[in-house]
Amino acid sequence: MQNFIYNGKTTLSHLGVIKSQGVDAANFLHNQLTQDFLMIQEGESRLAAFCNAKGRIQASFLGIKKNAEEILLICDLSLLPQTLKRLSMFVLRSKVKLTDASQEFSISGCIGKTASDLMHDSPPWRHQVFASTDMISLYPSLGLARVLCIAPAGVLPIGPSVDLDAWLWADVHSGVAMLDVACFEAFVPQMLNYESVGGVNFKKGCYPGQEVVARSQFRGTLKRRAFIVHGPSPFQSGQEIFSSHDPLQPCGMVVQAASWRNQFAAIVSLQTQATLQGSLHLGSLQGDALQLQDLPYPLLEDI
Image 1 (cartoon, rainbow, N blue to C red):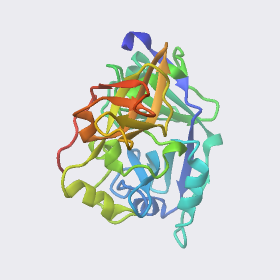
Image 2: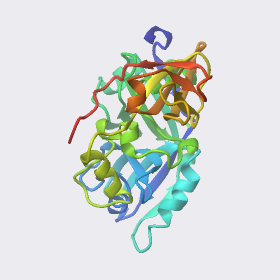
Image 3: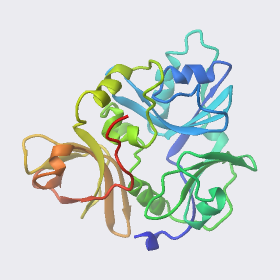
Image 4: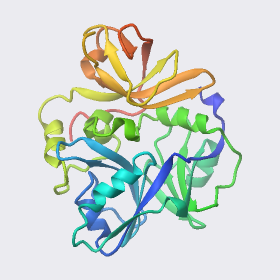
C-alpha cells in the first residue's frame, strides 16, 4: 500500500497547539499528564495523555519541551478548547500560563523521502530544531518514515505535496491513535496501547487517574487493546464494534479513521477476546464485516 502514498508533505489543519509557559511549566504538566515532563530534557518530545480521576483519557498530546519554561502540546482541535479549560482549572498558584497558540504555528506532516531527509530515520519521538521548525520523528507506517513539523505560522517544509487523506491513511496504519472529541473519556491509556508506544511513564509521581492506570497495568491481563482494521465502507470515530461471539453488546469502538482511494481503515479499541473468536462488525452484528491487520509494533507484556 505504500506505493499509493509516495513522498511529500501536507498541512495538518485538524491539529492545534496548547502552550504551557512559565517557571512551573514542566512541573505543572508533570503533575497532570501521564508523561514525566521533569525528566524529559529540553528539546525532547513525548506522547502523553490527560486523564480524569477514573483514568479515562480526556485528551492525548505530542508534547515538546522547548526549554525549561515552555512546553508545546499538540492535540486534536476538536478537543483543544475544553482541554485548555480543564487544565487551566488546576493551575491555581502555579507560575504557568496556558494558552491556545494554534494561530502562532503551522503544523504539517512529512512522509517518505521528505521525512527521511529531515530526520534521517530517527527513532520515534526524537526531536530536533532546524530553521525555527520543531520536528518530531513519529512511528513509521507502511514502511515509510514520518515527521511532524511545527513551524511559525505560514512556514511549511520544503518538498512535494501529498493529500491529507494519504497522511491520515498512514497515520492509522502506524497504530498510534490521537483522540478527538468523539472518544472523550472512552479509554484508559492501555486500551490504546499507549504503554507500548512511550505514552505512559509508570515511574513518575501522581497525576489524575494514576492509580487506575497503574492498576490496569500491574493487576492481571489487559482486556482491551488497540488494533488496526479494514472494512468495505467509511469509519467514524466513536462508532461501536460488535462481535458475533457476543452480539448483545459492543466489544469495541473506532478511535481514528481514514480512507484512501476507496479503501477504508481505522484504529479500533477492542476487547482482546473478541479478536480471538467470532467475526467483527461495524455498528451492529448486521454491519460490515471487518478484517484485523497486523500491528506494526510489539505490545509490552510487562514493565
